[in-house]
Image (tube, rainbow, N blue to C red; front, side, top):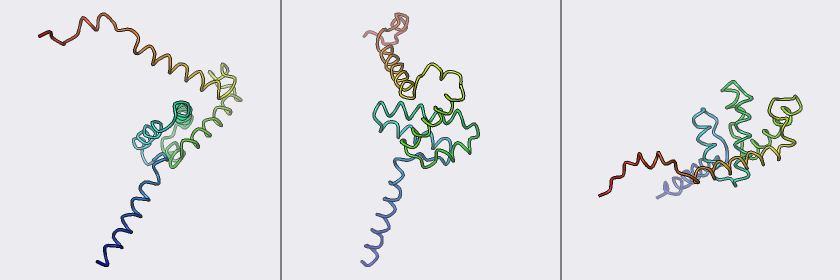
Length: 141
């Protein structure tokens, strides 16, 4: 009976420690980093999701060394990744990085990416190709 409270205390502490990293990127391996990014972006609002994705992939593009990249993103929250992305955007824009001259600001770039994503989503559900219908394998009984 004396061991039960100690066991419950250890179990509670373990679960609290395990659950406290739920809002951070696990950067131990590339696979775990991508898995945690996928989980984190699903918890964000659509606007924040686009900012987070763009920031994460900008960082991935700018840091070529895998270990350095994983160390950079490990333990970071989405807000920190977005802040790092904004900073990297400004550095690239100031240095004349190709492709950034068409955007006036970070917000402008995110707005255009958001519009492109909405356009892509709208195109997916609009028209079915008649060839797809001809190749349908559903048989009439």
